[in-house]
Length: 231
Image 1: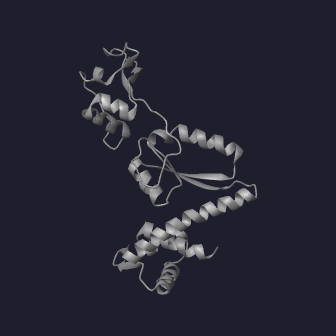
Image 2: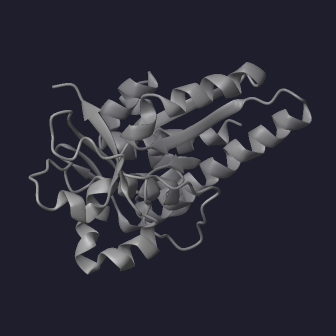
């Protein structure tokens, strides 16, 4: 599949924003990369990159071509996987974007369990926020996203959804620590430390402003479980 090599060259130049840096990543000479891209531009009849004093920038034609390229890349990977399935090998690379909360424990365990029965399957994992993850999925940079509260995108639908409840972390001496469960209003009288606003849990808490009953209906939050620290 030699014709895919030039697609790889273009994709690497886009990511590096430099023909020289892309060549270093590809372990070829910069002149070889530039020659391949120039030949492609001549074939297409339009420049893909604007050559700048410090690197390159996609032209409008280049943006169209890169969008095609990434869709084509995703189709090629699926085609390879299907061929390997026919041979009974079950191999390939699964590209996943996941939230930080899943990257330390859940996902490594799930991958390890999967590879016990499919040892020839590799995984490439990116730890990103939910908005970047969905953008990567739309751009065919990943095959699957595992994130908390993803934004809606047309033409995509979730394969599985799970409810995730919020947890309060406090010292054992805190006035609320003796309770088995808490409602959001129980915490309102005390100062709290919240995660930054890109975190899904923080966004859910901020939506309390639209009304607790409405929040419960929309997000399934009924109470906050307690996790007490010593001290």
